[in-house]
Length: 162
Image (cartoon, rainbow, N blue to C red):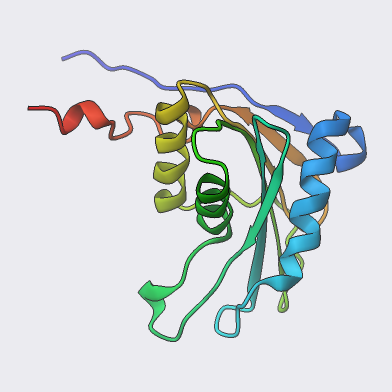
């Protein structure tokens, strides 16, 4: 037996004002989308903004449903809308932010497992890493180059080849 370790690097900014202009712009779009979330059950609103290779920015917010598995996270709403409106265009970056109606969100929000799998699928499709920009309501911003860092040992399409 041999023990192995996984690790990854990320950038941490103290606030969104420190971000490069393109990242700050994308995060502003995500923040502006948070209030369009439909979150009557969790009261936890998430906004996401996707920048495409053609420069277009597509936004999405979480959409809950009383039949809980029927809802959809902001990240997938934005990604699916972006891919449908821009077929064949790579996703360059995604910014994700949140706020709660019950408590301040002071730590960067991270994608759930299903969203991580969806993001890595778009990376596989374009053969390019997606820049992931994460923030809570306030505070620090994390930037991660590629979903492999957040989803190591991920399921890839070669697992479906016969």
